[in-house]
Image 1 (cartoon, rainbow, N blue to C red):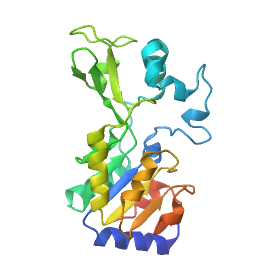
Image 2 (cartoon, rainbow, N blue to C red):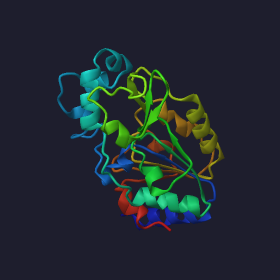
Image 3 (cartoon, rainbow, N blue to C red):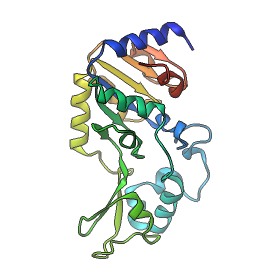
Length: 241
């Protein structure tokens, strides 16, 4: 690891009081949750339908059996636990130096680590909502429901509170995320290739001069960063104050 870059990041963290962390799938891979776009990721595996098709709103409506089979097998990881990155961010929040976490992940590991101000751009597997009566089921309750989950109270279909293809992001979540990024005195972006929009465009809301990108490979926005570190996230975060 480049020691000069690490020391500069340590300095940034020590001097900042409004850190915002923006994370993608790479934040959770060290907890055993596979990402989407790597060579062995979800999008490069073979199914009867492309994953992008299966996890779309129209497919959910018209092919619920296949949708829920895929969702249960490939998108739920109830035994996953927070890693050092999740735990360090929760520590910073307790210390009053982290303003918010903005995440593209749906696994709830930031909250499991203790983070409280988390903007989940793509929703969460831990909320499952009856489309008829609005009753909410947690992940444990959802996993005990039938193959195509229906509400025991009213018989309505239960939909995971995750953003599918063809669906828009929650405006309240996106507003909160943007406002946090605009207030940040340090923006750390990690575990994402920054190739997916609109999420990648959130970086444009940051007007400060401490934009840090941490990813194992280069990203599409390296050219605008003040500091780029191409290392495993856990190895970097394990050395931060």
